[in-house]
Image 1 (tube, rainbow, N blue to C red):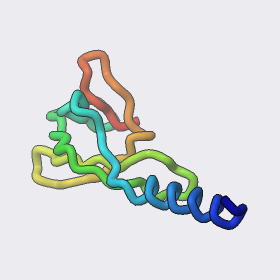
Image 2 (spheres, helix red, strand yellow):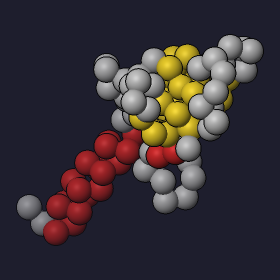
Image 3 (cartoon, rainbow, N blue to C red):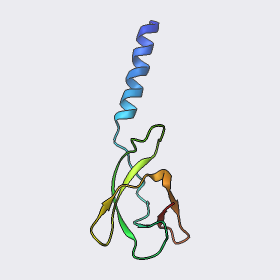
Image 4 (cartoon, rainbow, N blue to C red):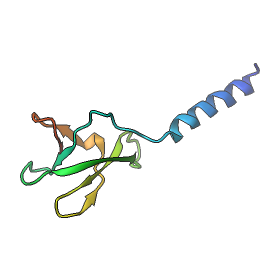
Length: 89
């Protein structure tokens, strides 16, 4: 295999990996609390997309709040609480 063929194969593999749809685990938390940790938690829907912030390798996770608003916090900005739910940092 020539050097050019090797580089093409590596580039194809990298591109294929980057185009895969991001996922969160089956055992992910189902609730997410706001920064203050108070009030009703939002529902983690399981929908995800890659974070577009420069240099970030996290995923944005869809959260539907009790008032109906939908937000997409980045997984890099979430912490796991003692009760197993996520909380925005």
